[in-house]
Length: 296
Length: 188
Image (cartoon, rainbow over all chains, first blue to last red; front, side):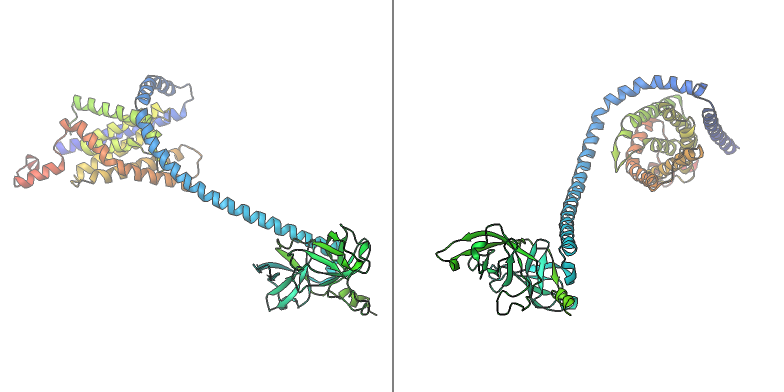
């Protein structure tokens, strides 16, 4: 009997509280901002506000203490995240600069092929994948080989001009000899005076070229542009075709040393291509296509 | 438990101070990205210590205070905390758990009921918020955080209400064991 009474009382209290909550909820939700419950709430809040403000000030040190711990942990976490983000951004920047440089080189090659007329020699683009660290071996390796149509002695160019020629070929790679290699030589001519000659490396001066065997060397001046002649410079074999098509720029005359006689004149040529900074090059796989096309 | 006037006064003071500390300090400290919520822990502790009816009344009062102080829709927290206080009290009355970590489990369950119940009521009232993964994460983190705080809050509540409480289950059982089951309560 007593137990039933307790249970009834407990349930009644629960029911009253739930109903009261629901009534408050419904009435509050249903009335406007100027309603009675809202007004009571605002009034109560005005009573509580000073208490809350005082408590807020009194408990601020505790809050700050916890905040300090939290901020420290957050700062450490943020630091790690920002460091990782910084590394990622630096890597992205390097990648972007690399892509930009490659794009510029591709664009240059494209222009060279279209406007410079090298497109007819079936160029094969290749990336430099290795380079000889020794100044004695002026060679580098590219990622295209015989399977791409690359053969020995084919000319290699970049947007600036002639770079060298293919020295050896494997199935997927090739080794390119630079203009400045001691074994390199190419028949050439000046654009300004059309003086024929031969360009080869200046022995003992890495990076420098010499324009030699020039019949009228005195006609050649500093600043003259040197291009491939497309034929042999020898008068006896004047119709012998060169390895290189005509018109590829080799460099510019950087200095002319005068001697006692005409034959003592030494013409130095600065390569047009930056041979220390090669990334993307083109191999002209059909350097004589224009000759074949003109043949009857 | 019959709540005397002094006990009711202490409960009111506990609710008022707990509510103020919750609103002015605890709610402004984020741990794991969420603030702790002392209110369900207080209500559950009171319900667990005093029984279902005092727990429900205390929950209703604390909910009303929180709703009023925060200018929220009146009745939402009252309804939720009434259920929490009543439920915690009924667990005490029906199961009388003696394990030392029982308040922790009760606190976790109370927080879960309170946060999920509050969210459900908000949705029912037409608050247009998607049930996002972020919301679920926040609810779970609040439950985890409150679970860690449940025992200290329970200890504080027990200390405040100690003079008006019957012997706690552990002490009662310990006495029953040492006296061969001759505890007055075991006869009752």
